[in-house]
Length: 106
Image (cartoon, rainbow, N blue to C red):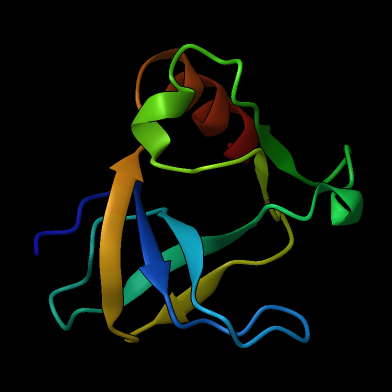
């Protein structure tokens, strides 16, 4: 499986108290040694903070390409470098949703 920047992949990545595999946005092209720089996603919107997080809204025209099944958010305070194995690729950011995410992340 080839992974690219802005793909959404599922990784076994701890997040808070959860050890469940979770979707993550790949923030940089994968390093030659396979290390990925990712930002975890959560569908537990009650935990999101408007000042910190980016929300993926299913009403957005480009949401479908993400492969996410429900509204989710990227936690702006959590960036991980991991060599953990990607369980699967579910989608990617594209179009105006990608543009908005890139503006938000800086």
